[in-house]
Amino acid sequence: MAIGASVGKGGINDLADVLVVQHLLNDWLGFTGQKLLPTSGECGTLTVAAITGYQGKVLAMPAPDGLISPGGKTWLALAAGQGARPPLSGADWWNANQAKYPNSAAVTDLIQPFQANAAAFLKALKDAGATVTVSATRRNATRAHLMHYSWCVAKGSVAPNKVPALPGLKIQWDHGDLAKSKAGAQAMSDLFQIAFEPSLTSRHIEGRAIDMTISWSGTLKIKDKQGKTREIAGTPRSGDNPDLQKLGAGYGAIKLLSDPPHWSDDGH
Image 1 (cartoon, rainbow, N blue to C red):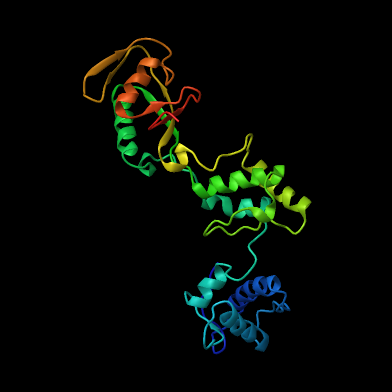
Image 2 (tube, helix red, strand yellow; image 1 turned 90 degrees about the vertical axis):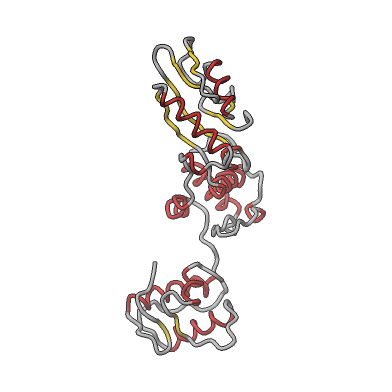
């Protein structure tokens, strides 16, 4: 969302830009219990007064000028929803926003020294002819927050008005009605495809774990951390192989036995 030219007192006031500003101002006006602007696309006295009011009350400008310029302070605040009620949780929120908080499958997103250790182990596996598919490395902390509290609010273990705010995350869990709040959270939980209560902390969130599937055929001839070639002839020919796990530990990648694809810097 953007405006192409200035809107307000002395502005260019193109119809499309004025409509955008009027809708955004109405988010603030509605949240603060003020009368909404007619969304006509015409910048009249009411729209200028609303801009001036927003600048004074939300931005605390000592001398509001009633003008919104592209990329200016007023536009950036208005476009970010400053002063307005955040959008309500639910399917619409999920569809519009969840992609902003993706998880990663890139080794470069891991923290050091695990990043270098995992990269070295992966190189040894691939050089030996193993097939390796990395499915997850660092998990997005904001996404983890959303998943955790969508589950908790839906199940009733956390009240919607008690969900802690997260800097930069604009979402309103409390719909003003408990049933609606829980329904909104449940819709998000369903879209996240959550089966068990998600954790707020994990080695993945910390950038200290990698999920990968490993396979090979025949005998795997792979170099250990010291560069010596080791032969792994036994089965299974996967990450569950105890000899491979021992070799991986030498690289600083330790297998979590209860989770087939999961390796981390401490086995958790």
